[in-house]
Image (cartoon, rainbow, N blue to C red; front, side, top):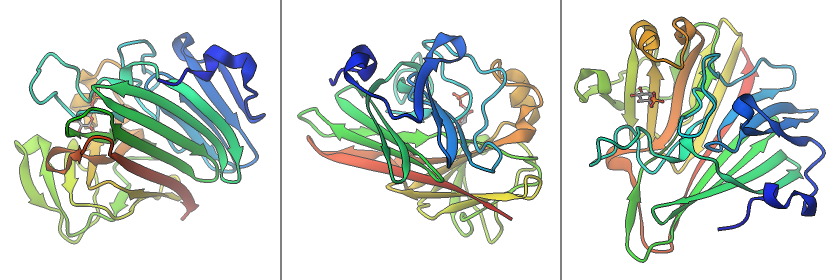
Length: 293
Ligand SMILES: O=P(O)(O)OC[C@H]1O[C@@H](O)[C@H](O)[C@@H](O)[C@@H]1O
Protein backbone atom coordinates (compact mmCIF):
# COMPACT_ATOMS: atom_id res chain seq x y z
CA UNK A 1 0.00 0.00 0.00
CA UNK A 2 1.35 3.49 -0.79
CA UNK A 3 2.60 5.44 2.20
CA UNK A 4 0.53 8.33 3.44
CA UNK A 5 2.11 11.63 2.45
CA UNK A 6 1.48 12.83 5.99
CA UNK A 7 4.12 10.34 7.13
CA UNK A 8 6.55 11.88 4.65
CA UNK A 9 5.32 15.46 4.89
CA UNK A 10 8.77 16.98 4.45
CA UNK A 11 9.07 15.47 0.93
CA UNK A 12 5.82 17.00 -0.27
CA UNK A 13 4.72 20.53 -0.82
CA UNK A 14 0.98 20.70 -0.42
CA UNK A 15 -0.90 23.07 -2.76
CA UNK A 16 -1.07 26.55 -1.27
CA UNK A 17 -4.84 26.32 -1.05
CA UNK A 18 -4.72 23.19 1.10
CA UNK A 19 -3.75 22.90 4.76
CA UNK A 20 -3.67 19.90 7.08
CA UNK A 21 -4.80 20.63 10.60
CA UNK A 22 -6.32 18.82 13.56
CA UNK A 23 -10.08 18.80 13.07
CA UNK A 24 -12.84 17.81 15.48
CA UNK A 25 -11.73 15.14 17.94
CA UNK A 26 -8.13 15.99 16.91
CA UNK A 27 -8.59 13.85 13.77
CA UNK A 28 -6.47 15.09 10.83
CA UNK A 29 -8.45 17.24 8.44
CA UNK A 30 -7.61 18.84 5.12
CA UNK A 31 -8.96 22.35 4.62
CA UNK A 32 -9.31 23.84 1.15
CA UNK A 33 -9.64 27.55 0.54
CA UNK A 34 -9.60 28.89 -3.04
CA UNK A 35 -11.24 31.75 -4.92
CA UNK A 36 -13.85 29.28 -6.13
CA UNK A 37 -14.74 27.32 -3.00
CA UNK A 38 -13.89 26.20 0.48
CA UNK A 39 -14.07 22.64 1.76
CA UNK A 40 -12.88 20.06 4.24
CA UNK A 41 -12.08 16.37 4.22
CA UNK A 42 -11.05 14.07 7.06
CA UNK A 43 -8.67 11.17 6.62
CA UNK A 44 -11.16 9.39 8.88
CA UNK A 45 -13.36 7.54 6.41
CA UNK A 46 -12.00 9.91 3.71
CA UNK A 47 -15.16 11.80 4.66
CA UNK A 48 -15.71 15.13 2.92
CA UNK A 49 -17.52 17.20 5.56
CA UNK A 50 -17.75 20.57 3.89
CA UNK A 51 -18.01 22.09 0.44
CA UNK A 52 -19.11 25.65 -0.20
CA UNK A 53 -18.77 27.23 -3.66
CA UNK A 54 -17.90 30.94 -3.44
CA UNK A 55 -20.97 33.08 -2.88
CA UNK A 56 -23.16 30.08 -1.91
CA UNK A 57 -24.26 28.63 1.41
CA UNK A 58 -22.59 25.34 2.50
CA UNK A 59 -23.93 22.45 0.43
CA UNK A 60 -23.28 19.55 2.79
CA UNK A 61 -24.93 18.91 6.14
CA UNK A 62 -22.89 17.74 9.10
CA UNK A 63 -24.60 17.17 12.43
CA UNK A 64 -23.71 19.38 15.38
CA UNK A 65 -23.80 16.10 17.35
CA UNK A 66 -21.43 14.16 15.07
CA UNK A 67 -18.83 12.07 16.90
CA UNK A 68 -15.26 12.22 15.61
CA UNK A 69 -13.35 9.16 16.70
CA UNK A 70 -11.97 5.84 15.48
CA UNK A 71 -14.61 3.18 15.02
CA UNK A 72 -17.42 5.66 14.47
CA UNK A 73 -18.70 7.16 11.20
CA UNK A 74 -18.94 10.95 10.98
CA UNK A 75 -22.64 11.86 10.89
CA UNK A 76 -22.75 14.05 7.84
CA UNK A 77 -20.83 15.14 4.79
CA UNK A 78 -20.16 12.20 2.49
CA UNK A 79 -19.38 8.99 4.40
CA UNK A 80 -18.39 6.10 2.12
CA UNK A 81 -20.39 2.89 2.59
CA UNK A 82 -18.21 0.00 1.39
CA UNK A 83 -17.84 -2.95 0.83
CA UNK A 84 -21.37 -3.56 2.02
CA UNK A 85 -24.42 -1.33 2.49
CA UNK A 86 -26.78 -1.59 5.48
CA UNK A 87 -26.37 -4.70 7.61
CA UNK A 88 -23.59 -7.14 6.67
CA UNK A 89 -25.13 -9.91 4.51
CA UNK A 90 -24.04 -12.76 6.82
CA UNK A 91 -22.51 -11.33 10.00
CA UNK A 92 -25.04 -9.49 12.21
CA UNK A 93 -22.23 -8.33 14.53
CA UNK A 94 -20.50 -6.40 11.72
CA UNK A 95 -21.16 -2.63 11.60
CA UNK A 96 -23.77 -1.20 9.22
CA UNK A 97 -22.54 0.24 5.91
CA UNK A 98 -19.10 -1.44 5.97
CA UNK A 99 -15.89 -0.62 7.72
CA UNK A 100 -14.16 2.07 5.74
CA UNK A 101 -16.23 5.00 6.99
CA UNK A 102 -14.92 4.37 10.52
CA UNK A 103 -11.16 4.11 9.89
CA UNK A 104 -8.45 6.51 8.68
CA UNK A 105 -7.58 6.36 4.98
CA UNK A 106 -4.12 7.12 3.60
CA UNK A 107 -3.57 10.41 1.83
CA UNK A 108 -1.45 9.63 -1.22
CA UNK A 109 -1.73 12.72 -3.49
CA UNK A 110 -2.71 16.35 -3.43
CA UNK A 111 -2.62 18.75 -6.37
CA UNK A 112 -4.04 21.98 -7.63
CA UNK A 113 -5.43 21.64 -11.15
CA UNK A 114 -7.71 23.67 -13.44
CA UNK A 115 -10.82 22.16 -11.83
CA UNK A 116 -9.68 22.87 -8.28
CA UNK A 117 -7.81 21.24 -5.42
CA UNK A 118 -7.50 17.49 -5.77
CA UNK A 119 -6.96 14.91 -3.04
CA UNK A 120 -6.42 11.18 -3.27
CA UNK A 121 -6.97 8.80 -0.36
CA UNK A 122 -6.76 5.02 -0.46
CA UNK A 123 -7.58 2.00 1.66
CA UNK A 124 -7.64 -1.75 1.10
CA UNK A 125 -10.13 -4.14 2.63
CA UNK A 126 -10.79 -7.82 1.90
CA UNK A 127 -8.58 -7.66 -1.20
CA UNK A 128 -10.58 -4.77 -2.61
CA UNK A 129 -8.50 -1.65 -3.11
CA UNK A 130 -10.41 1.63 -2.88
CA UNK A 131 -8.94 4.77 -4.45
CA UNK A 132 -10.93 7.93 -3.71
CA UNK A 133 -10.20 11.15 -5.59
CA UNK A 134 -11.97 14.36 -4.68
CA UNK A 135 -11.81 17.68 -6.53
CA UNK A 136 -12.88 20.79 -4.62
CA UNK A 137 -13.78 23.47 -7.13
CA UNK A 138 -16.87 25.26 -8.43
CA UNK A 139 -18.14 21.71 -8.59
CA UNK A 140 -17.37 18.94 -6.13
CA UNK A 141 -16.24 15.77 -7.87
CA UNK A 142 -16.08 12.45 -6.00
CA UNK A 143 -14.45 9.52 -7.77
CA UNK A 144 -14.36 6.13 -6.03
CA UNK A 145 -12.47 3.47 -7.98
CA UNK A 146 -12.41 -0.05 -6.58
CA UNK A 147 -9.99 -2.68 -7.88
CA UNK A 148 -10.21 -6.40 -7.15
CA UNK A 149 -6.69 -7.41 -6.10
CA UNK A 150 -7.71 -10.99 -5.23
CA UNK A 151 -7.26 -13.89 -7.65
CA UNK A 152 -10.96 -14.76 -7.57
CA UNK A 153 -14.09 -12.80 -8.54
CA UNK A 154 -15.42 -10.44 -5.87
CA UNK A 155 -18.68 -8.58 -5.39
CA UNK A 156 -19.12 -5.41 -3.36
CA UNK A 157 -21.68 -2.74 -2.54
CA UNK A 158 -20.84 0.96 -2.30
CA UNK A 159 -22.60 4.24 -1.63
CA UNK A 160 -21.48 7.85 -1.42
CA UNK A 161 -23.85 8.61 1.44
CA UNK A 162 -24.23 12.33 0.73
CA UNK A 163 -25.95 14.47 3.37
CA UNK A 164 -27.28 17.70 1.82
CA UNK A 165 -28.03 20.78 3.80
CA UNK A 166 -31.53 22.09 2.98
CA UNK A 167 -33.67 25.00 4.16
CA UNK A 168 -36.58 22.76 5.15
CA UNK A 169 -36.82 19.07 4.19
CA UNK A 170 -40.62 19.41 4.03
CA UNK A 171 -40.30 21.97 1.21
CA UNK A 172 -37.71 20.35 -1.07
CA UNK A 173 -38.35 18.22 -4.14
CA UNK A 174 -36.00 15.77 -5.82
CA UNK A 175 -36.43 15.52 -9.57
CA UNK A 176 -34.89 12.79 -11.70
CA UNK A 177 -36.46 9.68 -10.16
CA UNK A 178 -39.88 9.98 -11.83
CA UNK A 179 -41.27 6.76 -13.37
CA UNK A 180 -38.73 4.60 -11.54
CA UNK A 181 -39.23 1.90 -8.89
CA UNK A 182 -37.98 1.90 -5.34
CA UNK A 183 -37.57 -0.63 -2.55
CA UNK A 184 -39.19 0.85 0.55
CA UNK A 185 -37.07 -0.16 3.55
CA UNK A 186 -39.85 1.07 5.84
CA UNK A 187 -42.48 -1.21 4.25
CA UNK A 188 -40.66 -4.53 4.53
CA UNK A 189 -38.75 -3.95 1.28
CA UNK A 190 -41.94 -3.55 -0.75
CA UNK A 191 -41.29 -2.53 -4.36
CA UNK A 192 -43.20 0.67 -5.22
CA UNK A 193 -43.58 2.91 -8.28
CA UNK A 194 -42.49 6.52 -7.92
CA UNK A 195 -44.97 7.61 -10.60
CA UNK A 196 -44.90 10.97 -12.30
CA UNK A 197 -44.07 13.13 -9.28
CA UNK A 198 -40.73 14.22 -7.92
CA UNK A 199 -39.77 12.91 -4.48
CA UNK A 200 -40.99 14.90 -1.48
CA UNK A 201 -40.62 14.26 2.26
CA UNK A 202 -43.81 13.96 4.31
CA UNK A 203 -42.66 11.29 6.80
CA UNK A 204 -39.60 9.15 7.54
CA UNK A 205 -38.22 8.10 4.17
CA UNK A 206 -35.75 5.29 3.46
CA UNK A 207 -35.82 4.13 -0.15
CA UNK A 208 -33.53 2.42 -2.62
CA UNK A 209 -34.39 3.54 -6.14
CA UNK A 210 -33.29 0.84 -8.57
CA UNK A 211 -31.97 1.18 -12.09
CA UNK A 212 -31.56 4.93 -11.68
CA UNK A 213 -28.62 6.43 -13.52
CA UNK A 214 -30.09 9.86 -14.27
CA UNK A 215 -29.07 13.15 -12.67
CA UNK A 216 -31.06 14.09 -9.56
CA UNK A 217 -31.90 17.72 -8.90
CA UNK A 218 -32.61 18.79 -5.33
CA UNK A 219 -34.81 21.89 -5.54
CA UNK A 220 -34.71 23.95 -2.37
CA UNK A 221 -37.12 26.92 -2.48
CA UNK A 222 -36.21 28.01 1.06
CA UNK A 223 -32.51 28.33 0.24
CA UNK A 224 -33.39 29.54 -3.24
CA UNK A 225 -31.09 27.06 -4.93
CA UNK A 226 -30.94 23.73 -6.68
CA UNK A 227 -28.23 21.15 -6.24
CA UNK A 228 -27.48 18.90 -9.18
CA UNK A 229 -26.23 15.36 -8.48
CA UNK A 230 -24.75 13.93 -11.66
CA UNK A 231 -23.33 10.43 -11.59
CA UNK A 232 -21.65 7.71 -13.61
CA UNK A 233 -21.18 4.05 -12.70
CA UNK A 234 -24.09 4.05 -10.24
CA UNK A 235 -27.32 2.10 -10.72
CA UNK A 236 -28.93 2.66 -7.31
CA UNK A 237 -30.03 5.88 -5.60
CA UNK A 238 -30.84 5.94 -1.90
CA UNK A 239 -33.09 8.69 -0.55
CA UNK A 240 -33.20 9.09 3.23
CA UNK A 241 -34.65 11.41 5.83
CA UNK A 242 -34.95 10.14 9.41
CA UNK A 243 -37.84 12.49 10.29
CA UNK A 244 -38.86 12.91 13.97
CA UNK A 245 -38.73 9.48 15.65
CA UNK A 246 -35.49 8.22 14.14
CA UNK A 247 -33.78 11.56 14.82
CA UNK A 248 -34.70 11.28 18.47
CA UNK A 249 -33.38 7.73 18.70
CA UNK A 250 -30.09 8.48 16.91
CA UNK A 251 -27.47 9.50 19.47
CA UNK A 252 -25.20 11.49 17.17
CA UNK A 253 -28.01 13.46 15.53
CA UNK A 254 -30.01 16.41 16.94
CA UNK A 255 -33.72 15.89 17.56
CA UNK A 256 -34.64 18.71 15.15
CA UNK A 257 -31.84 18.36 12.62
CA UNK A 258 -33.96 16.25 10.22
CA UNK A 259 -35.62 19.45 8.98
CA UNK A 260 -32.29 20.78 7.70
CA UNK A 261 -31.00 17.77 5.75
CA UNK A 262 -31.74 14.96 3.36
CA UNK A 263 -29.56 12.28 1.80
CA UNK A 264 -29.31 11.42 -1.88
CA UNK A 265 -26.83 8.57 -2.11
CA UNK A 266 -25.28 7.46 -5.37
CA UNK A 267 -24.81 3.75 -4.94
CA UNK A 268 -24.57 0.21 -6.25
CA UNK A 269 -26.36 -2.02 -3.78
CA UNK A 270 -28.52 -5.15 -3.50
CA UNK A 271 -29.03 -6.71 -6.94
CA UNK A 272 -26.99 -3.81 -8.32
CA UNK A 273 -23.83 -4.70 -6.38
CA UNK A 274 -20.68 -4.68 -8.53
CA UNK A 275 -18.89 -7.91 -9.48
CA UNK A 276 -15.24 -7.69 -10.47
CA UNK A 277 -12.98 -10.27 -12.08
CA UNK A 278 -9.42 -10.44 -10.68
CA UNK A 279 -7.57 -7.24 -11.58
CA UNK A 280 -10.72 -5.46 -12.79
CA UNK A 281 -11.79 -2.00 -11.56
CA UNK A 282 -15.03 -0.09 -11.25
CA UNK A 283 -15.49 3.68 -10.90
CA UNK A 284 -18.38 5.45 -9.21
CA UNK A 285 -18.25 9.13 -10.11
CA UNK A 286 -20.44 11.86 -8.62
CA UNK A 287 -20.43 15.53 -9.54
CA UNK A 288 -22.25 18.12 -7.43
CA UNK A 289 -23.05 21.64 -8.60
CA UNK A 290 -25.26 24.45 -7.34
CA UNK A 291 -27.47 26.94 -9.16
CA UNK A 292 -29.63 29.76 -7.87
CA UNK A 293 -33.36 29.19 -8.51
O1 LIG B 1 -27.01 5.38 11.00
P1 LIG B 1 -26.27 4.96 9.73
O2 LIG B 1 -25.65 3.59 9.85
O3 LIG B 1 -25.28 6.00 9.31
O4 LIG B 1 -27.35 4.86 8.59
C1 LIG B 1 -28.18 5.92 8.31
C2 LIG B 1 -29.16 5.53 7.21
O5 LIG B 1 -28.44 5.38 6.02
C3 LIG B 1 -29.26 5.14 4.87
O6 LIG B 1 -28.43 5.03 3.77
C4 LIG B 1 -30.01 3.86 5.06
O7 LIG B 1 -30.82 3.61 3.93
C5 LIG B 1 -30.84 3.95 6.33
O8 LIG B 1 -31.50 2.71 6.53
C6 LIG B 1 -29.95 4.28 7.51
O9 LIG B 1 -30.75 4.45 8.65
